[in-house]
Length: 322
Image (cartoon, rainbow, N blue to C red; front, side, top):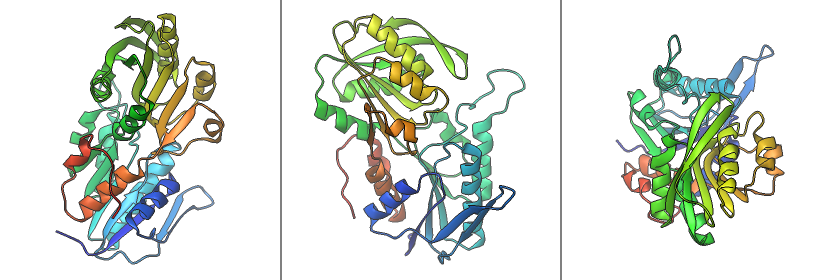
């Protein structure tokens, strides 16, 4: 079904990204107010008429995660009760993704619970980017379009044209992503063996591959406390790597992340604008933000027009604004 009208809404998680997508689509941002009651409960009202509209709610569940998740759920419920034609939740960063299975006794599968909440709140479709675990797509009982931030990273690093480049995965779980980068950039591949000590610290063991006398690009889906990343960078430097670059989609940068990154032997960190940078991160001179506005904007346009989104999963170059 093709809907005549498109409405784009956003909460407080990343309004700058929503405005950028609206500019890309040449559409205004729908009028809404997302505030708090004195007891910190979320208060929300949408002033724009959405009856029968194709609604897209742009809301990453970045820190503070619980607040932004609740805003997303309330937006979905509001749109369902306001008779929106279709509700698509655009979640550039999907929080609670680390708990995607029972890896020990008496723990929740948080990612599945959040998927259930979003579906039950009224979402008809999900558009997301670089899930921490790709199997989370199957946790939803509604269509999920899963895009990759590597598309914008590929273009940037091709322009840098780094010689003698080796793409490194900071752990075994990221090998598939690293292989995609190495193929796109015609680079060699290496892997760091990692052991998780606690939620905010990790220990690196050994390096699989050769980085001596070579430039290195470490790739990951997110940077949280930066423990894994900084330890991997130190190991690579000890093994003779030249300049070390980092490409990550989601710059969560919580806890000791900024302090760790400042002391790490990293020349450049490229991230995307799926979540807003903290003020401390903005003051760092080796962090560069690449925009996913064209990628998400084009996906929204195609979903609205009932066109194929699958070509956006492939590295085909630039996108044209409507």
